[in-house]
Amino acid sequence: MDKLSSNDFENCGKEFLDFIENGYDLSHILENGSEELVDLIKLTWNFDYDIEPEKVFFSLIQSVERFRKEKEIKKLRKLLNSTVDPKEKKEIMKKIFEILATLKKRGGVF
Image (cartoon, rainbow, N blue to C red; front, side, top):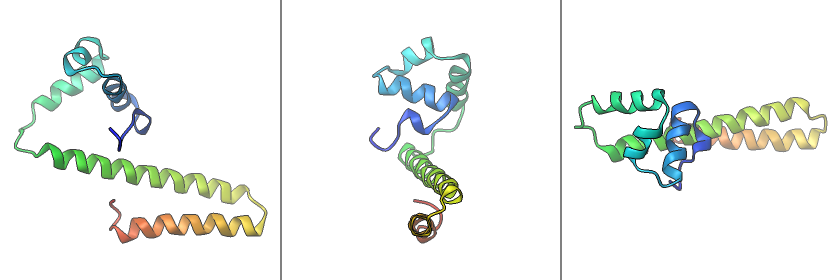
């Protein structure tokens, strides 16, 4: 939970992590969750569980971290477009390039 929060998701993901962050177990979620969330959980149970949960969770964390970086780049680009000070523009561009370099260095995946 130190890697993910409900703020990283929308809809079912947010709802699910809200329940988890508040200490609720799966039975509580199934009884009190939205129909959409309950249907998603049921659908997930239909998958073959030869998958290693740690790998799935690690992949999810990588995706969320990539999403965070992409979101940060978008925010910086907006700021760059609204900034007139050349020195400030240079600093913003430096931050953008640092984030892009990190993404490229890791093959686009964290």
